[in-house]
Length: 217
Image 1: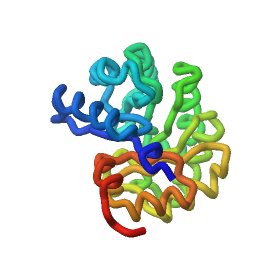
Image 2 (image 1 turned 90 degrees about the horizontal axis):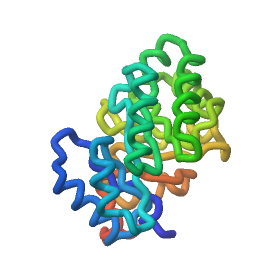
Image 3 (image 1 turned 90 degrees about the vertical axis):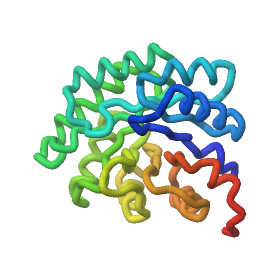
Image 4 (image 1 turned 45 degrees about the horizontal axis):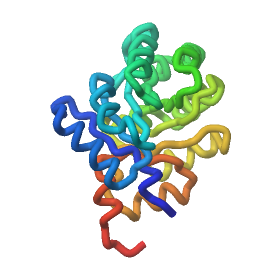
């Protein structure tokens, strides 16, 4: 298993500096991570460091609340792609989910996917705020909207990824969508467990720790 190729090396805190983003990207090159995950304003910065590499750039939109207009999310996604992003990690409208407006959620995801074309779309459903029924409905909306991934968490909510949520997501999407676990993944044992459950990508700021840990699995 090449653990590094499952990792989206992530820095999304509001206080992140240009220098810290440049360091994140340099680390991604050194450890050959699959991707970096950054806020939209830093896509160009990431591109300047990663331009001649295979490391992908994932940009978050509608982050972290998911409560802005669909038009705003589409515009944000389009700007990120224009600046060099390969992947978009979007936050669903959580309030719509909790209102039972699942068709609106699906339509929004579909519109964003259409706007970014063949670029990868990951749908963050922020599981910590949802009931089991709402989690299933959110995964189904992403599936129907032809997204590429469902993702557990922003890392800014009240909780992150859990094995129970990953299992539920896998039950809904099967092999039709990929799964990204994110939030609270800080040790190698947890990371390997998620991969064994069928996760294709890990969103973490602890990627270097995961790779350099001497823990026996």
